[in-house]
Structure formats: C-alpha cells, structure tokens
Image (cartoon, rainbow, N blue to C red; front, top):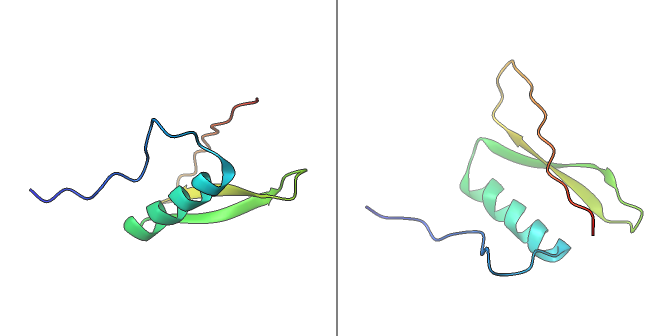
Length: 67
C-alpha cells in the first residue's frame, strides 16, 4: 500500500505561516476540500475556512484557541 506523506507534524509549533501551508496542502491533496476566508483578524491576517464537500446539509465546526 502506497501511503502519502503526512501533512501535519504534531511536534512542530503551529504558527500562522504553517497553518496556511497546511491548509494549502490539504486543499491540493483532497479535491472535496476547499479553502476560503472568513474575514481578516485584527492583525490583518486572513481567517481561513475549510469547506468539506458540496452536499445539501451544512454543519459548522469551530476549532479555536486563545493564547
């Protein structure tokens, strides 16, 4: 079985640059995934949104943390 390399390294800190790199890699690997922006943070950075699939049902999952 031919496994694709892992996209996420759980031992590496996740900063904004790494987050955008990972979302781009995921969108390129999985055709049912698209990445868009929810808006802009107070630091002027885009807030990414990952959209899975194109079905009639819409479910919102929010993953966040505060430092």
